[in-house]
Image 1 (cartoon, rainbow, N blue to C red):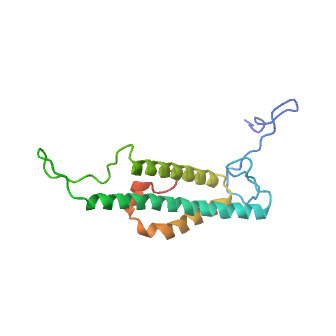
Image 2 (cartoon, rainbow, N blue to C red; image 1 turned 30 degrees about the horizontal axis):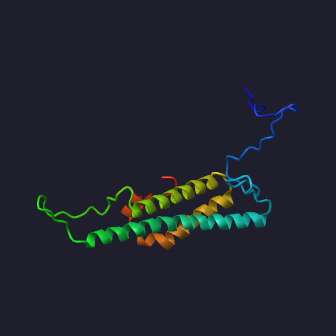
Length: 167
């Protein structure tokens, strides 16, 4: 059964012609990137887009590190405080990973988490253009970002803070 005409638009159609996205890796320099207005039409514009995407991927890794850094500081601050004592309960230490829902540290972590999710899904969508240059920009940016920021984070912390894009 031939399905090649299913997306064909007749001359009587009022709908604008649709451009189909390539579902395979290609080397074009004229793909729409995330938004209709971000449509590089030249090699120089594509190169600029690749550089921007590279730095966004580095920033994603930096944001993960910054969240880890803030969490580590909070953990260290809570560990250095003396245990609490009441007459009816034995000595207990505060749980450093339990934050009040409306505390400032939790609100900051929430905002940073939302920023991290926006970046991660944006990078995923850039990769899904199947443009080799854009995909390489995401991969190399994430690799450089991990090289810069990842050495300070442990495997446990990476899993806790949201490891790779789109987890």
